[in-house]
Amino acid sequence: MKEDTSQKQEQKKAVALKYTPGEAEAPVVVAKGNGTLADSILEKAREHGVPIQEDAALVEVLSKLDLDTQIPPELYQLVAEVLTFVYQAEQKAKVYTLPE
Image (cartoon, rainbow, N blue to C red; front, side, top):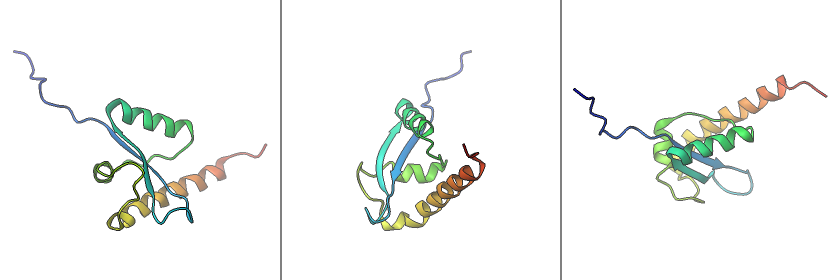
């Protein structure tokens, strides 16, 4: 008997946000995608040293937003937690970087 492989497997999703204080009121969705596009987004983030936070529920909600759209106020708290993670990761990286 063969295993039924017709069920759709869960595809990887990724969403990239950009936030520059003073430029916009809230973070903006600058990239999003599924499958291989999600892999490309994650690869670009790694290449540029952008910290990656995994949160499937938040990605699901953010992926429904249009590109170049600011996140809605209902998501401020959740995204603030992600930005805090990013800031802390950057600070730790600075501590572990040896001077030239």
